[in-house]
Structure formats: structure tokens, C-alpha cells
Length: 422
Image (cartoon, rainbow, N blue to C red; front, side, top):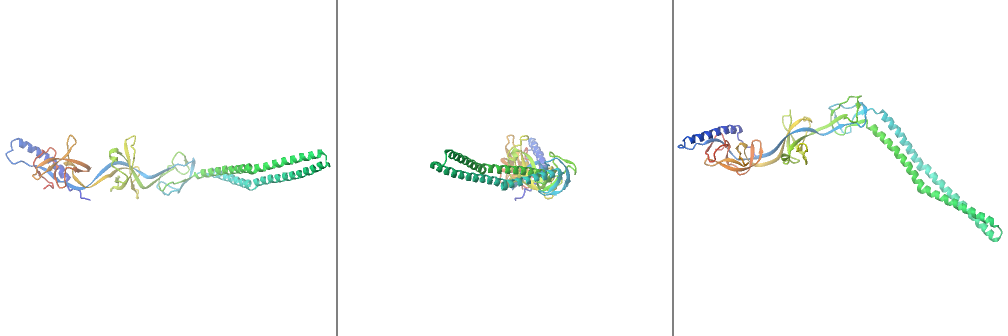
């Protein structure tokens, strides 16, 4: 990195006043008739245009926030039975922090567990015993009806032969036909019942048994969940920063019972005007200056909001930094200094040397080889403190009036006083 110009800024300021007064005196002396002598040189601060590294800085006030924070609110209303942590305790994700009174919930869970086990047994009985027995009975009914039908068919066939031979009256043949018809109807009914048991009864019975089992399981799991809500666990790694209740007091489902913050890293949130925020991007380096901490802490820009805050019409910017010793406390007001742009080998001059016209044009008083000051138009770039970048109009090594240029006539002879222009 190029060295910063070694101009003496207090000297520049003092010389600016002296030079302005001297220039005025010289002008008055010229008007009174001293033109006969040699031209008087106005003493000014003369500096050389130098190259250095400039950074475009965006400075803003911000407030510190933890990287993560969990305000743990219980899901049930119950007195606190036991606290296992105090304010300042370090905790880990999943660690048990407190237990609420839960004897009634334990009893409800035990009761629903019994109902669930009973439903399981009923389901197993239905699938393994009741349903097969019903199917077996229907199959036996079909077999019995089939045997009866076969027997009646033989009787009818035998009596038909005897009737044709004239050995049997018509009445007995008709009776045998009726008995055969009844047997056939009984067989068809038994077969339909078996088909219904196999196709519909089996499916509905299993569905009913499964539904009762699922219902009992749901009640049991719900009771277990209610019991689990009485155990308060940490969702993140961090430090307990707030514990408003004491053991035995009533915990409410609408009020945080504990607050846990992850302070290993912190985020500084600032609201910045849109033109300045447009210069920033994620990954830009930054420093955080906090009260009570001598050296600024280095960080990175992690968020540049894509939308304006509707209330302040500013852009929210986050700077994240490590906080291993927890010196940075959430809620602290800090100062952010963010590097929006770095320009190596920039032509730099003192900000006091830049003259701005009424029309907004920029110029400097360049000192030629004959030690006469000539106004020269320039184009300014970024600023860093008391330095300003010159984009156009000057070259490295040129001499300019660093202080005392205000009110100096164009073409006036100057001489260096306390500067580096010789």
C-alpha cells in the first residue's frame, strides 16, 4: 500500500489564515502605488500531488444484536417445579433448562397408554382369531349346503326314474323336486354369504379394527406431547440472558420463561441513506467501535437490504463480527465504518486545496515553474478524511497551493512557506 502523503495539516490551516491576510495586504499595497518595486510574492502552503491508497468510507451509527436469540415460551400453563439454569449459564441445544408441574399430565399419558395397548390387542384378536372364525363358519355352511344339494339331486333323479317306470306316484316326484329347489336355494345363499365375508366383511372388519387402533394411538401420542411440553429445553447453543420467574411461580404460555442468546458472534444493524447504501455490498470489510473498547473490532458486511424501510426510507445494513470474549453486548450503540471502495495509487490532494465554484465546478491553484499560481479545472473523486482524490486535471508530482488559495488572484506570484514545494 502506498504511503499516505506527509503534509502537515495544522500547518496548512495556519498558513491558510496567514496567506489570506498577506494576499489582502499585498493587494492593498499594490493599489497605493508600490508597483514600482518588484512583484511581491504571496506566502502560501505549496504541496505536491502524490499517489496513495484511498478508501471510500461509509460511517453510520448502529445497534448490536446477537447472532441468534430464543425467547423460550412454554406451551402450557403450569407452576415451575425446577430450574436447572440461572442467568449467565452457558447452555447447549437440547439441554433441559426447566421442568413444570406435570403429575396430571403423567397420569393422562399413562391412561392413554393403557387404551392404546388395549386397542392393539383388539386389533390382533380381530385379525388373528375373530375374522378367520367367521370365514371358516361361512365355508362350512357352503359345504353343508352343497352336500344337501347333492343328496336332494340324487333323490330327485331316483324318483324320476321310478315315476317313468310307473312305480312311483306323481306326488312324490313333485315333492322331491321341491326339496331339490330348496336345497339349491340354501346353497346359493351360503355361497353368497361366504363371498360377502371374503370380499366386504373382511375388509370392513380390518378397517374398523385399524381405525380404533389409530384413534387410541393418537390419544396416547397427544398425551405424551402434553407431558413433553412440561420439559423446557434450549433450541440453540448460547447463554441464558433472562430468567424472570422463580421456582414455584406460574409459567404462562404467553410469556417467555427464559431467553437464550448466542453471543459467539454479534450483528451491528444500521439504517443508512440509500445513496450511501448503494456503494456497499456483501463481503465489504468494516470496523465496529464500541464504548469501553479501545481498538475497533473488524467485521464483514453480511446483509444489504434489497428494500427501503417504509418508515425511514433508509436501507438496513448488517455487519457481523466474532465476539469470543463477549465484550460486545447486545443493545449497545456502536459506530460502523465500512469500506465501500478502495482505490490504489489514487492522486490525492488536501481537501483544503480544492476550490468549488458557484456552479459546482472544482479547481485548484497550480504553481508553475515561475512560481505563479494558475487556476486549473479538475474533477474530484472519493474523499477520505482530509484527503480528496483527483480523477482528472492533475498529474503526480505537480505543485499546487495546499492552503491559502481562497481569494488568491489567478496568475499571482507565490512563495512556499513551511511546505514541501521547493
